[in-house]
Length: 418
Image (cartoon, rainbow, N blue to C red; front, side, top):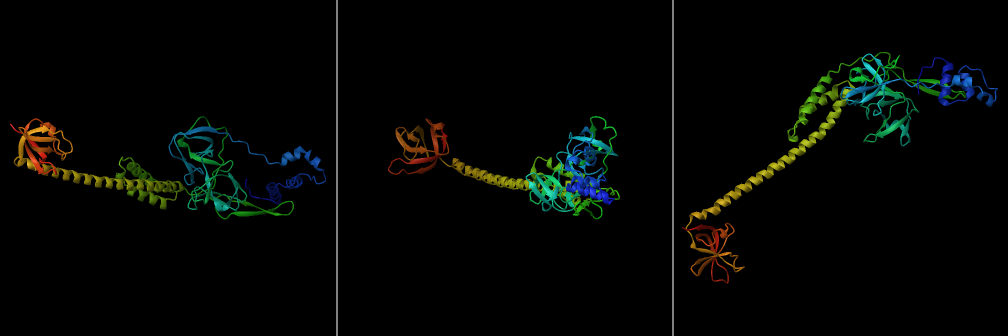
């Protein structure tokens, strides 16, 4: 709805009649046209000249020229200045339609990917994709919460296209108002051609309502009171904030990117960056700067969780490696103990031959002297097959096989004799 100050009773009655869709005769009287009260309905319909003069005329579509962004993360703002809040950040190569220029700023068609937020408390759903404002002078904000900057206010009855809801279910994400435009710094835009001839910027919108919101009273043809909400524009252009924290935000960005560039997540340390982002988020008076800092703080929480998990896994790896080292040390000590008998005298000497009878104490070979079997042999340490057919000195442990007349040697070493 377009909102204009009412300067006379006649104009007030005119707007009231348009808002409430009053009868044709009442509309004609409010506009100052000759009365048609005595004329039949068909006669009124046959007077196209009078009707055409009174009907509101839609504003013609504005001419524009296509353009492409030549910068990355370029902020698209509510008005032509850094004091106005930013709707979103657009990437390199993003395409926009430019209407006009005002100083260093281009006025552009509102991006299709843009949106704003309204509290669920003040929007009644009409259907799945639309809703109507049920409060007067309701704030439309840049983010889902009262901590975010206010873009503008809307009157009761205004309708929005509903795009979604925040994760807490407290704020609706809504599409831009019809005809809404945005602004972008000209230095980041490459035009595909000249601006339309006679292009004039629509003028900067207010950063937010200044002073109280007025309620202008009027009555329709039946005498019923109606109220039109009129938000006065700011009388003084807002002072451009010298965002001293923008440089600190950039410094924090460098620290953040330097840490995530490290391949080992255990080496990430975001302490300094977090301190800077927190300071910017708490103290900067520029909405876009605060918003970027808050986004980074949210991301840091995820990165820090990754770092913590990587350190946990690293500790597990260290513990496993320490255990493995202990086992290797223990094995080396046991091997040293096993090799000690090599210095002791042989407990038997003889010719090592294959023993073919199975299941006799696990013996695989026998030690013979001529035709006499001196001992049966088995070994879990050496391969007796490597000394088979050789006369050897045997070291090991002698055990008795129950029910068998020949004893067994558990061989730990078999040394061929010259």
